[in-house]
Amino acid sequence: MYEVIIDEWGEWHVAKNSDGEVTSKLLVTPSQKWRDENQPDVSVPQLPTFEEKLETLEQEKLVLQLALAESIEKQEIDKINNQLALAELVETLTMKGVL
Image (cartoon, rainbow, N blue to C red; front, side, top):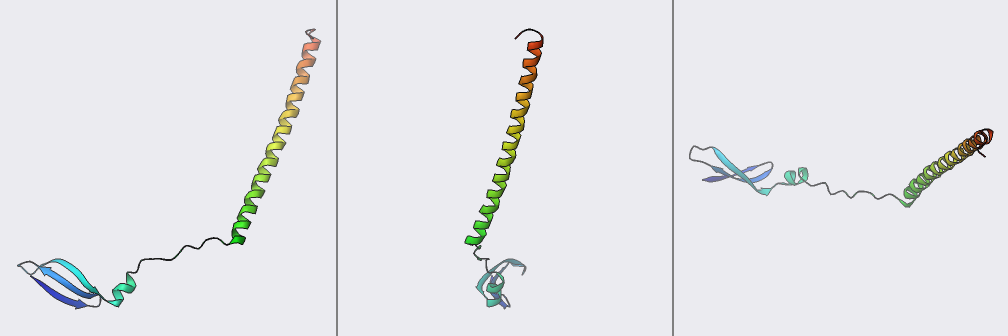
């Protein structure tokens, strides 16, 4: 057996067993209050503006330029250290009479 109940949320069909206990509830006609409180969030995410995207790209460009400059500096230091090591090796070999 079921009965119809109307409350602030709308019209419900309520099924009860022989003891009168509610076994299920079905919202048949939702009220405006139910619709207002159960609306899915359909907000559209905002895409970045052209200016925001340009600023982001400029910042990334600066980071990459800095990384490139640091890499070039390290390579130059490594090149100088290698030249010094090679000069020391030549000097050592020359002093020992190998060259």
